[in-house]
Length: 122
Length: 161
Image (cartoon, rainbow over all chains, first blue to last red; front, top):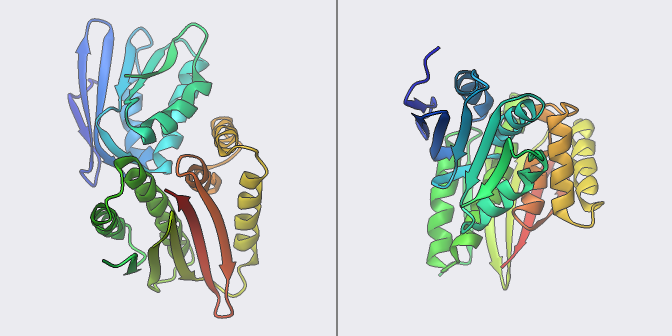
């Protein structure tokens, strides 16, 4: 299935803007992720975006305003899947926003030694 | 200027937007720094989400109360909702989760451990307890609860400015 340039959740609060350049797919997270079960929307997006292991996926959260704890579950599911596979996923967060530093900093436990999975403050 | 914000909420997901907007306005009026504002909005949202999920799971339609009180350098966020009289199982789970969090020297360790359990699929999304652990770690808040004689569960998080 072709990757779309933009994905919006049902409440229209969360927008994922997708761009491709060479072997890198970048997903920019915008707005707020507050749905009761964001895993449904995110699962569908991740299935499309992570379908090709040869592509490096960068998820940029710098402009994300807020995410609830229910959003973290599908995120860590995809990190765990990639960690145990051969794909690549880099999470970029704002290291000048304390909430992002705390929230994404904890996800370093999913970082791989070969940096296929990495969590980077920008 | 009032040091308290009190809202009566319906157990509907859209109410979270009202909480966020009113709380942001309240905290901005009190000149809270942006990091404290983010933390308190998160703490409040997670507590209110839990209350709404509980109400909906028990098919209850009662309104519930949300309050934020500034007392010196402490901010007390509290959610109060009626629970079923025979809901000892939920209360036991809640108590176990809070005691589990308190068992760690550092809330960061509890949070990382929770992430590990979720990623290993040892905890499902509805039982993850990640929201409460996040309140303790990212929200730097101390959690507590009590149930009064009218079966009102008061769940609180105390945040130090």
